[in-house]
Amino acid sequence: MRTSLGFIEPMQPELVGRLPEGQEWQYEVKWDGYRAIAVKNGDKVTLYSRRRNDITNRYGAVARAVKKLPGSSVIDGEIVAVDSKGRVSFQGLQNSASGEIQLAFVAFDLLSFDGKALLAMPLIERQKILKRLIRGSGIQLSEPLDVSLSYALEAIVQFGMEGVVAKLKNSKYSPGARGRSWFKFRVGKGQEFVIGGMKEGNPFESLLVGYYEGNKLHYAGKVKAGLRPVIRRMLYQELEPLITDKCPFVNLPQGSPGRWGEGLTKEKMKECVWVRPKTVAQVNFVEWTDHGNLRHSKFLGLRDDKRARDVVREA
Image (cartoon, rainbow, N blue to C red; front, side, top):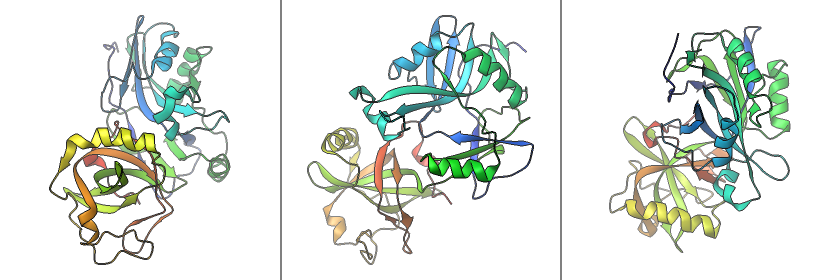
């Protein structure tokens, strides 16, 4: 089947509390970066976020690596940042211009090659072609982990990675679909949250974040760790145009500040500046408290590849 080369909406794994097991499944690293669709049409390369934003200029090193590939193709993968110790760091994507961080493109699926759509081909066959295609280009391959699920999870924990993705070996690629034959499991606690406000400071002290239940935004907690002065200034420039008089969280005020001061009472709300809930942040945390707030949270970076309305509390 011939196809025009262009953006293909990424297939998404469903978050689960336990991954499936069996010979029909393969396990891959859940890479902690930005999902990207790389489209190479002759000598022209375009990198798209999963929301179809053109991010080519932002990740020029990745675009140059894709340009080395023969022919024309559409590749699904993840843009990751690697620090000086070889560790993948999502926070490093925010500082990729510093020179201390190296960008890499980890490819895990081939959707089209030389005008031929490969979506209906089994995953393992698509990945065989992909492996041959990217050889010597500088693009990395997300190799399936040739071990049992228990060993895969053990290795992910040992190397400090985010999680594991399980995929049916014979699965077709279904653009825009979630789950069905792809599932993901997070090892650590962390997810995306919507920024709905700031606690006053210079220019602010902490972010106020939440998640959606239906059409309602629920407050989840304050995030202060990880906000270095340069990041605060950058974030304030992003959030200042969104400042509003209306609190966007439906479950505020809270009756108690909580054991660790994570709650937001009516009195504490007087110190807050509200913003329209448009911006998504990646946050790590230790646990959810009994009152439904985050404990020991840390800001990792912004996610412009995710829609605020898609952010829910993950199990």
